[in-house]
View (tube, rainbow, N blue to C red):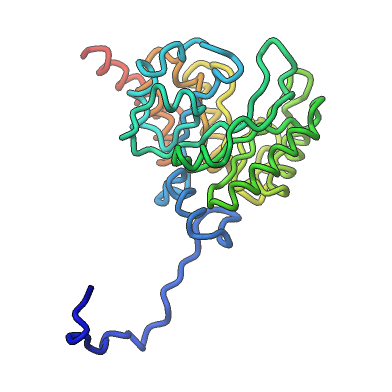
Length: 296
């Protein structure tokens, strides 16, 4: 400790300057505590206000789907290119090096498989384990209009409350069954409910008609799901339109790890999300990086 005999009065109080407070850059997040903001700032790039999340949590109900058979082989090389990694605790512990500096959005609900009703989920991670894993956010699936809507909304509120106690944000994920339309009316309903019940950001689908209204009516950041595998240019067009209409980022999985050149694709997506690059120029980037990688 400092020598008590050498303590001197401070001199540089800068009395001519007001306190330098700051407004947090993410939509709906300014009143959150410091820890919440810090974790969100790991996920959303402070320079662009956007994020490119890499979703690799599909195994929690799909098993070893194409592209995720060996996360340690196919996904680990992509992690440095992502802003955040959405993953289950099992895959994180077994396959992702702990020296990885990227933030983790931890899949926190589960309890079903592709063989059963998808909306029948429960909370699958204890908050203490999320803390042990240094999670930057907790992801909760919510099935508005599904057979187990009430239970999944209950999962969301419980995880939000637990996360709030520990300064960990919650991502509400709008799950859509085969029988539900992915239109602006439904997506607006589902995303708004997630935000109203405390989700700090929301993952949903892009819709060609009315997405700007969905984004405007949601008081927290929206990130879009990549969904099923699309041709690369089409996936880039979807990302571009979503960002142009108010999305704060993407959480892509199959459109990256099922791509012929995943590393090239995630770089092209980053160009769209963070730099505002057009889909056509981003696709040119994809092609050029693909050629370089293929030549190595």
